[in-house]
Length: 254
Image (tube, rainbow, N blue to C red; front, side, top):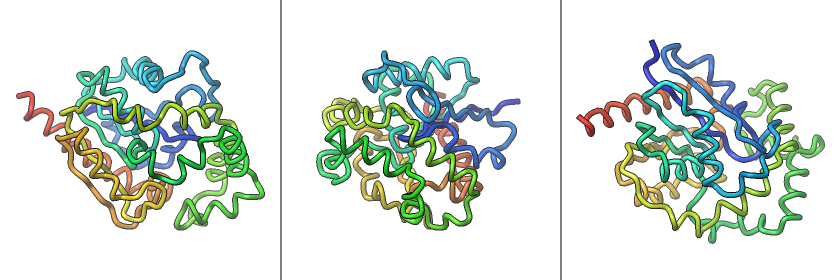
């Protein structure tokens, strides 16, 4: 019997493969789905997807038949898409876990500013996924890259090379979009690694205005990709948090 569905929404560059390493550690009673959205990894881009609203509606189409209750887990820009999803389909999910999402401080952070010119995005995507540059990027992204299977890391970087929607995300995830979001009372967790270097943990507080029924959970020794580096711990954490969110939702709606 299925306890609940956990829908994992990937970040920029890659697809559902980002969550592949956690699958062996998930209970059989949990229906887990990590769809790859159009334009990411090996999935062809859909020219009709021009806004985050379009991606949210596409996500809904991909998951609408999954068993309820349902928890959304969004990481990076997957968190942005999850926030947009709530603007339209809040009643269809029972809880939200945002893991180091993208949205706040977009006009302040250096990286989004650097990536504004399209040619910089294209060059950055090529450089990041380049075979020659991978030895430089591995220690920047991962604390212990030598502990990650080599074939997994090859596919991880290869997916960035093939991602057709990579540059588009820097246009449609912007400060105006974030400021347009209305608050949601859905039970939520803002999940962050204390060693996160790409999206620093202090950003978690910025999301509590949008999610007043949320808590912040900081995990020691997690960096940007705990689902890859610490898959068992990541699976254990998100399952535990999902169950707490479902209990809270049940109490709220009783």
